[in-house]
Image (cartoon, rainbow, N blue to C red; front, side, top):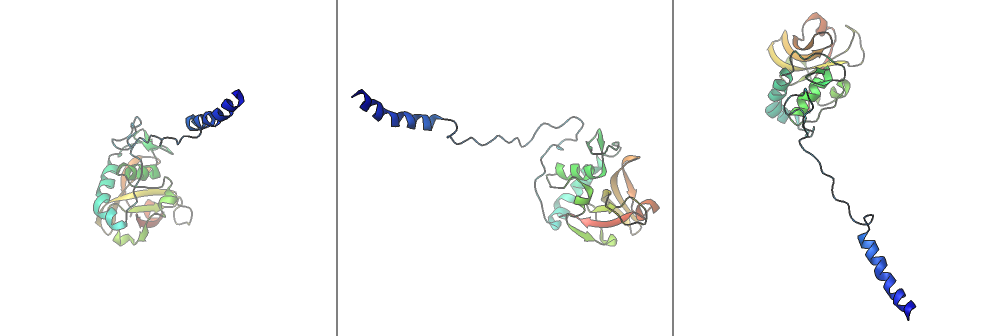
Amino acid sequence: MQQLKTTCFLPFVFLFLLTSCSLFRSKPEPVVYRNPAPKPGTRPGAAKPAGKVVDAATYQRQYAREVVSIARTYTGTPYRSGGTSTSGIDCSGLLYAAFNTVGLQMPRISWQQSEIGYEVEVDKVRPGDLLFFVPDKGKAGYISHTGIVTEVRSRADIRFIHASSSRGVREDNLFTDYFKGRFVKAVRPF
């Protein structure tokens, strides 16, 4: 009789263990913090996770002016390879930080950034378009530098902001001898 009670009781014990064991329970969704605390030295809002990808028309209409404005807040920031904050930033980090701040996805590396969107002729560039350069004047090579068009003053004066390795974040004219000889392409992102 005792064995019968134990045998009948075992399925209940097994069921209890099965339902109470954490291995068999569904795990709660992990907590995702949407607005993490900004790292020291970053601009307000720069800690927002990159998210949206928009079309070129939406970018030009809604985001380009803001991206340029945010990039300009980094003016004077010293150059630091791999940097993305006000304590030091590189050229692709400047693009990454400006786009990230407005919630748009942008790759971190300049050659990857050069593949987002489509090429535009120099005489068609607008503020918010991206410019890409090679390291050596007059030679083909890998894309190693980038900037954001800030304003088009004339056909011979297209201003862009970038992180210069020797002078930090600043605006220059695309048509200076230095940049004109290294220019590869202009891209309208997205």
